[in-house]
Image (tube, rainbow, N blue to C red; front, side):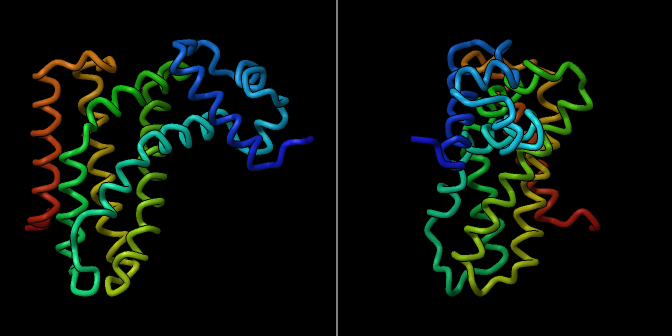
Length: 204
C-alpha cells in the first residue's frame, strides 16, 4: 500500500531523529535520509524545499513541548492582558531547559553547516518557526488580545532567545548533556537581561 503524503513526511522527520539519536550525523544528507526513511530523494524535496528546511522543522518539533507549557499556564483568558501574555511566555522560556535544547540544535546544524553565517540563519529559522506556531495557539487562548499584540509579544521574545543563543553558543561551544554550571548561569543571566529590557522598553 503506497504511503500518503503525510506519512512520507513523517517518515522523513523520523529518519532525521533516528540519524541524530544514533550519532550518525554524517548521514544527514538527502541520500542518507532517503535510505533510512524508505523514500526516494525526490520525495524528500517534494516535501521540503531543502534539507535545511527539513532539519529546521525537526528541531522545531523537538522544541514543541515548550509551546504546550506556555499554553497551559494558569491565566484567565477572558481577562488576560498583553502584560499577562508577556510574563507567561517569558517565564516559560526562562524556566525551560533552553541551554540543553540549544546545544542540541547547534550540534545538529553544525553537522551539515560549517559556515557561521548559515548556522545563524538556521538558528533564526528554528526560532521563527517556533514563534509562528505558538502564536497560532495563543490567538485561540487569548481571543481578547489582538493578533498584532500577540505577534509583537511572542515574536520579540523569541527573537531575544535567538539572539542570546547566537552570543552564547560561540562562547561555550556547548555539548548536549555536558553543559557547565557557568554556561547555564550565563545563559539565564543573559536571557533574563534581554527580557527585562523588552519589558521596560528599549526606547526608555
